[in-house]
Amino acid sequence: MKSDRRVKYTKMVLRNSLIQLLNEKPFEKITIKELCQRADVNRGTFYVHYNDQEDLLQQIQDELIEGMQNLCEKGGCKKSDWFKYVRENKDAVLCLYSHKATKSFAERINSLLREYLKLSVKDRGIKNEGKNEILFDYLVSGIVGCTLHWLTRDCPCDDEQLICILERLWQGTVSEFVK
Amino acid sequence: MKSDRRVKYTKMVLRNSLIQLLNEKPFEKITIKELCQRADVNRGTFYVHYNDQEDLLQQIQDELIEGMQNLCEKGGCKKSDWFKYVRENKDAVLCLYSHKATKSFAERINSLLREYLKLSVKDRGIKNEGKNEILFDYLVSGIVGCTLHWLTRDCPCDDEQLICILERLWQGTVSEFVK
DNA sequence: TAAGATAATCAACACAGTGTTAAAAAATAG
DNA sequence: CTATTTTTTAACACTGTGTTGATTATCTTA
Image (cartoon, rainbow over all chains, first blue to last red; front, side, top):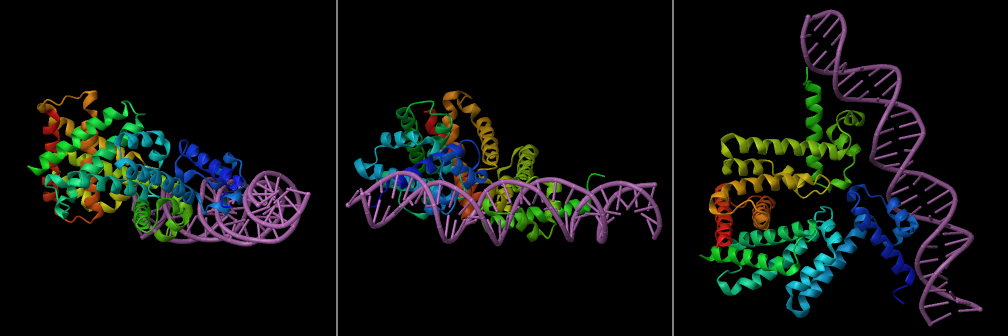
């Protein structure tokens, strides 16, 4: 009733085509016309499901975020699951993260991590106060920056090693901060 | 011979119009037509100086980077001058940093800072080795992230305070790392 | 300040992509 | 199989693009 095979197929090929095109050229230069040609979908059909390229990208983003949130809820945010998920969706993550138009992606990831970090350190004398915000800016930016660079370089070390060194870095930062 | 007042004027109003428009809408939605209307410059004239919107943005970027490099060379990169410059060019910096198409901006800033940090710590046992790259990823991302957030929030504290806390944070990270 | 050089404007052009229609064809669910 | 839903097709007006040649305005410098 709510999911016709044809609709599923159309949305799938359009999503794949966009990600594929994003690896070839910047988002700004991707036209709806070529997107549909690549997907072998009629241009009119595109407008049935999406308003424009950005709308499509937004839906891809929403699915990714949802996947991450599910990981965080179930099993209390296992780090290894999280990095695995990110690595497996590398192309989409990199595209989305550095894309201004759908800027909310970076912000949503950042705030997910920020909340996690705040929880992690609340028993170490780091209260949720305004003057500590900059510490979290620093931690979040540092961890995300390292992760993105790791993805960009095609994951030169395995997940566990990355997690280990990141943990050492941010725990170290916090230790110094409370001195 | 190489600088006609008319050219200077045209380029100036086009630059200003772009920055102004970037504060109203995303880059992708800015047309050459409206850019020229805003600047009161004939559309044909735009094409004499630039290929497209991105070309214009690139030139704005190049000037900003050049200004930063000049600051670093003269007077050995005074931090206060640097943050002052960034703050005074806030609008352009924020636009450029989070814009993918001219993605080199973020990378150029990052590598400027990375080189500076490497120089700063070379007498502390942190060698320029591959295994230390992630430390610099972390430092650079953290410092830049804090600075951008500071700019976004309209500089809630003055330059010196920001410099002071950032210095404490990254020096702390390094101390922990060498342990 | 006058003359020649250079730059900006104007109007027109073919062309690309957009967003929307209505009717025909194809695929699906029950 | 049949009624329903989706996709395709072809056409439409519209907006922005990139380029042109002729005209007007402004600048440089002698």
